[in-house]
Length: 224
Ligand SMILES: N[C@@H](CCC(=O)N[C@@H](CS)C(=O)NCC(=O)O)C(=O)O
Image 1: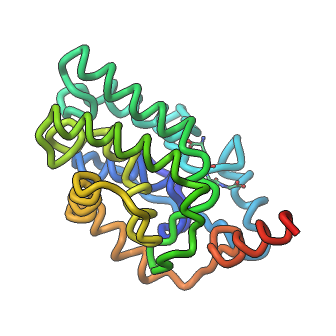
Image 2: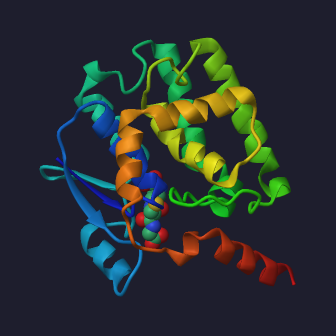
């Protein structure tokens, strides 16, 4: 089984299935592609039918979507607990994961993951206030039910989906509840996350489109 993924510093969708594979001790090969540099998109299109990553390849099967990869891993390794074993809990976990996959667009567009960076105050708080309110509510409800430290007690697929949000909260020092902050710390404490972070910090590449100063300058131009 092989996971094709991109720049660890920036690639949120890559991080999610990589965390599941690594945390649950599933053996896999890595194939890293770049989201920067001459011909990067052509290279990506040669490896991925969607021109995007992550892609999981298992024999003759190609899965080019993060959430579908996590579902496949759960199907293939049902005893690992990638989703909760209880049917209702599993439905709640899947709903949270799907909400992350399809929602939180302000956070995703205006606060790109940039693991090496520290940019407090550079994200317009009003623009992301609605997403942060929802996050506080969702994480708060799930953590109160599970008693933490992860959304369903121990780390699972839902936490993998939200891990890049934890990184954004740290990088931009976004204002969230104390409970959400504790959850951010729990994500950072996960050995698999630390492993990804350590590799990310070694990367020399810059993806301009994911740099907050570039995003803010573009927003200012559009408003002018
Ligand atoms: N819906 C896809 C999104 C994948 C995605 O947008 N990946 C980014 C990297 S984080 C990408 O490949 N970007 C390249 C591009 O937009 O050309 C998923 O969940 O896997």
